[in-house]
Length: 190
Image (cartoon, rainbow, N blue to C red):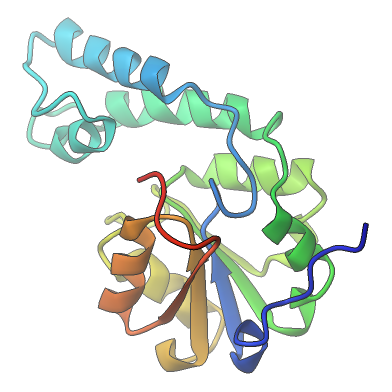
């Protein structure tokens, strides 16, 4: 079976930035177990989590003085799951055509997990820039991570497209002034 061709709209841009999980790979992570581990971090500190939602707990960790512990609890699962992550169709697209364009990854996953997943699938050399959750001070849907990726690729936001699988990805792109394409027909995931 031939790998998918780049979407015609994608080839119109000077840079392509991909989300990682749900776009290039499917991280082999039990997110319910991750949330349970993060709740344990809060419980061990005798602090009530702001929510049961994993990403809300991450966002609220700073207020509780738990940023490093919560980040490590999440990152451990992501790094472990990166090596065994199944590859998705856009990874084939990246490997077989996007190299002619500047390519980045902007992910809510930690940078080390992004690098490990890309290396595991032989994609590391096809990606010029990686911005993970811990690369900059803010996370998606704040536009900073995507703007940093686009800037490091040496293009203007209007000359880039962000490909992702979630409403958070779409919101990030909109806030950054970057065009957006869903992996499939609409949002899924975070």
